[in-house]
Image (cartoon, rainbow, N blue to C red; front, top):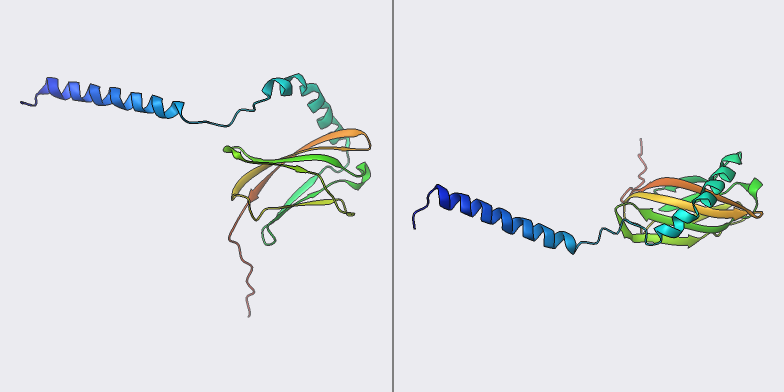
Length: 157
């Protein structure tokens, strides 16, 4: 068999067609997991969500978030003026839905809630705090970057 221009062009087009079929088959088996399954009900209740954000904006101090890399803890501080909070915290990464967590809000006497971050995958985490205090609904969002492997060392002079 002699290799000429016609054979080369046929091989290139054939390889291209096989590659495209492989990409299509591969993409059909991939679950992106980035779309909420209950998006229709979320859209219908969006005015409630806006009202919660307005209630949060009226607070003098909202929910504050801090990450303690040494203790591997995410700490949420709720405002004492609002009262005892109840509700849920959604922790998620935008890259996958498989790591999503839903936690009930449980605070101590100081108004803190600590979320253990030792088991979380390092990276950027979004926190959605949907809470209620004194029959008023609130909603807060925060972004935390979880870092692993940091060790505190004392430097002796």
